[in-house]
Amino acid sequence: MATKRDYYEVLGVGKNATQDEIKKAYRQLAKECHPDLHPNDKGAEDRFKELNEANEVLSDPEKRARYDQFGMDGPMGGFDPSGFGGFGGFSGMGGFESIFDQLFGGMGGGMRSRANAPRRGADLRYGLRISFEEAAFGVKKSFDFTREENCSTCKGSGAKPGTQVDTCSHCKGTGQVRTQSGFMVTMRTCPTCGGTGKTIKEKCANCQGSGRERNKRTANVDIPAGIDDGQMIIKAGQGEPGVNGGQNGDLQIVVTVTPHKLFKRDGRNLHLDMPISFTQAALGADIEVPTLKGKTKFRIPEGTQTGTRFRLKGEGIKQPNSYMTGDLYFTVNVEIPKRLSEKQKELLREFDGTLDGREFSDSRSFLDKVKDLFK
Ligand SMILES: [Zn+2]
Ligand SMILES: [Zn+2]
Image 1: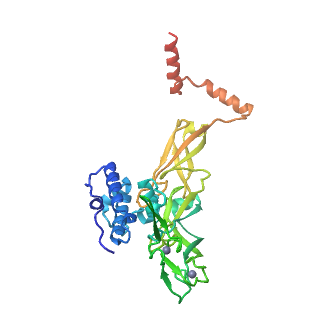
Image 2: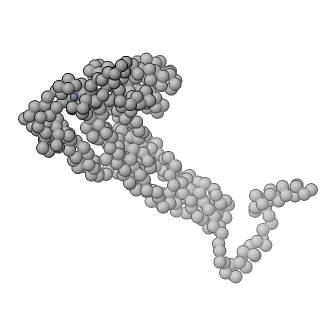
Image 3: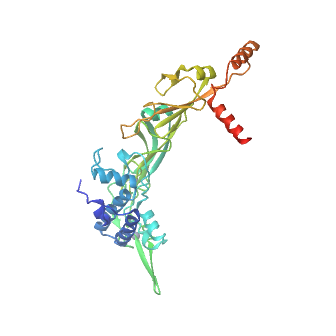
C-alpha cells in the first residue's frame, strides 16, 4: 500500500482546526480538484479520493479522535475510514456524482454527465434480524443475497469473447459530444455509444452487451458482541462492481435486534423491573434476580421502598471494541396483596395497632408539613 499523506495536510488545516474550518477547506478543495473538471487527469482523481477520505475522517468527531490517537494504522491493523472493522456509522459516500451534486447543487447535464468517468458501484443494503442475546454476546450469521457483477463470459466488456471493442468514432471515445448554438456550448452524452466511448460489433450472448450479470452470493458476518439495534456492519467492496475502473460498492448489513421480554437496553446497561412482596420489602429478603447469563442472588435490605433501584455490576452488555461491560439496574416494585382473607385482614389490623408512627418516616414528615400549613 502506498504511503498516505496526513489527513490534516491533505485538507491544508491545522491539528486544532474547527469543524467549520474543515468543512470550508474541504468544499474549496473539492471544487478545485473534482475529476469532472479535469477529465483524463488520473492525478486529479487520486487527489479527489484522498481529499474525500481525509474529510470523511476529520469531519466526524469520533473518527477524528481515533485518527488523532492512532494515526493511519489503527489498533485493528490498518485505518478504515468507515469505522473499526467496518463497524457502525454510515460512510455516506455516494460516489463522485452525489458529491458533485452537494457542491454545485446539481447542474443537470453539462459537465457532470461525463458517462465514461469512473463510477463507484452501488452499495447493497441488507436487513438482518437477530435476537437480544445474539446482540449481547455476538454471533456468526450467513445469508444469501443477489448481486450484480461483471459478466463472467465477457469480463464486463459486453462484447462477444474474441471480437473487438472499438473506440466510438462519433465521440472519439470521450462519451460526450459538444453542440454549440450561439454562445451556448452544451455537452451531451454521445448518442452513438450511450456515453461509454466504445462500440461493440458483436454483443456477448450471456449479458446481451450489458457487461453485467446477476449472481447469488452468500455473505458470512461476524456480528460483534454488544451491537445495538439499527447499527450497521459494512463489508467494504462487497457491493456491486464499479464502472470504468471505479471502486466497488459496499455491502451494508443493518442489524435489527428483537426486544427482550424482561430487559430493556440503554447502550451497554440493562434495566429490569422486579416485583417483590411487601413483606420482603419490610423485612428484607434474599431474592433471585434474572440476568442475561442466568440468575444471581441479591439481598434486599430491610425497609426497602418501592421504586428503589439496585445495581448488579458487570451484568450488562459488553461494549463493542472495548473492554467495558455495562451494569444491570433493577427497580423493585412493592406489590400490595389483593383479595386477602378475613383472617389475614384481622392480622394486619392487629399489626397496625402496634404501630406508633415512628415506623414511617415519610408519612411523619408529611404530616408535620400539613400541620405547619394549618397553624
Ligand atoms: Zn457478457
Ligand atoms: Zn460515442
